[in-house]
Image (cartoon, rainbow, N blue to C red; front, side):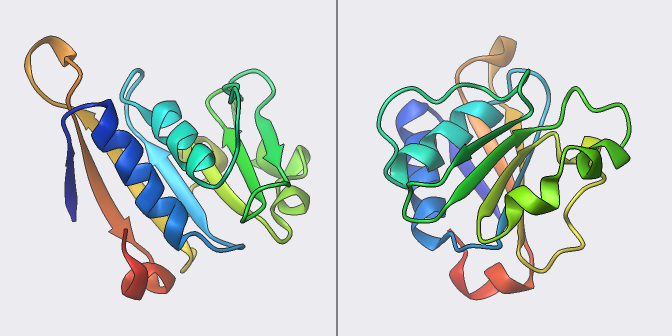
Length: 149
């Protein structure tokens, strides 16, 4: 499935549709180049789940948790991992217990596409000079088949 995201309002609406379908145990794996909109989409999902206020990028902390949301959430940015084994070293499985996972740069953590609860989203810039427009290429794991956003 391809979702056109021509502006920030479309990105926010897409994030809200994902948030409405999100359940504990799910993974939303966000891929795309630098500046493709991974963190922007993650922030839209987190806001739609009920978080008010700032959503820091977990680029340096690697993991941020949001236990107070409708669905407890772990927002992780694996960009700085040198090897997928480091995800285990930081205790990712413990963080994921009873929570959904928003994973930026999922390939750096070994990927999640093998999980039936994974919603893979690859964000691409469209238009001239990497403008504001984006496109999301969405692949839904088995558990997402009946609840695609």
